[in-house]
Amino acid sequence: MSRPVRLGMFLVGALGLGALLVAGLVGLPRFGDYPGPYGDLIAQLAVPQRHMVNTVTAVVFDYRGFDTMGEELLLFAAASSTALLLRETREHDTEDLVAAVRSDAVRAAGGLGAIVTLVVGLDVVAHGFITPGGGFQGGVLLAATFVFLFISTEYRAFARLAPATYAEPVESLGAGGYAVVGLAALVYGLAFLENFIGLGVPGRLSAGGSAILVNWCAGLAVCGGFLVIFGETLQENMAERYGRSTR
Amino acid sequence: MVPLQLVAVLFVGLGAPAVVLSRDLVKQAIAVAIYGFALVVLFLVYQAPDVALSALVVGSIALPLVLVSAIARVAAQGKRKGTS
Image (cartoon, rainbow over all chains, first blue to last red; front, side, top):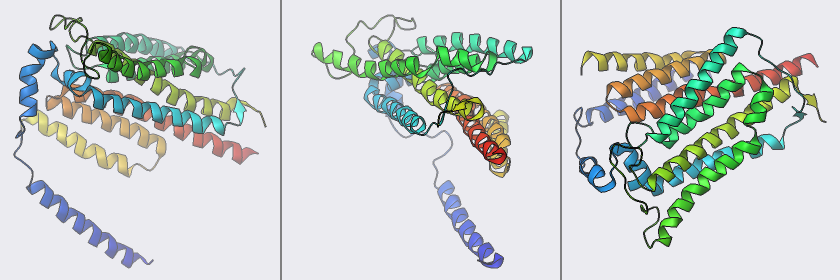
């Protein structure tokens, strides 16, 4: 295709897209406009009904807890398929691989990062029903702890502490535990994922009932899932760069 | 729109083309991380701290990490093919 023809096609496409975009932007509701009653209702009901101060997490892990289970299983499927695809084609092993970090500055910064992400991660998961946060965000932070460990020490330390042998059970425990907590409600004669523990005091760590368990399960599942994905791609890298060929 | 919101929108508006127009993959991964952080500021300024926290962990930790890891893998493969 010649340059003028391509340019012409681009212009037609750009103008069409631009026109659609402008038409769409003109039809947008006013800034800050909120028509639906759902958010207003939840904001009023979450504290008296569920004793959860942070309504966003209340929606995620209680009111719409079933949807969140789907999201969590989605991450589980993504991590599992990553592991499946990468392990199948691996040509080098990383058994006795040595790739230590030699820079003191990187070691210090990485070590500090690992401590900070571990503490903040646990805090974010635990206080999900009080302040912004919850299992998902905290889970990624907890996974980041192990990444900092890789940055500050060496690959073997990471591989020993967060290999598939630990990351996969943690992920499965989280993903399965979520469903088990949901099913446990059935034993009490309640609906799936309905609260079967005392509601606790609003604004305290005890607030939330069985959604607390669900929250921690999500944290484990997300942490494990990201570790599986990162661990697999990392091992792939290390094997390709430093590993001995097994074929 | 208060000035703070205007600045946040401006940074996001500048960040997105910067990501698209980066040609070097590693630089692009760094640009996408910074752009992710600009989004975090935007969400925070618009009073959505929960979304900001999610955007922070996904956009500034998880996504760049997977990207850099994948880029390094492809680069390593190219190097091996080049020498042997």
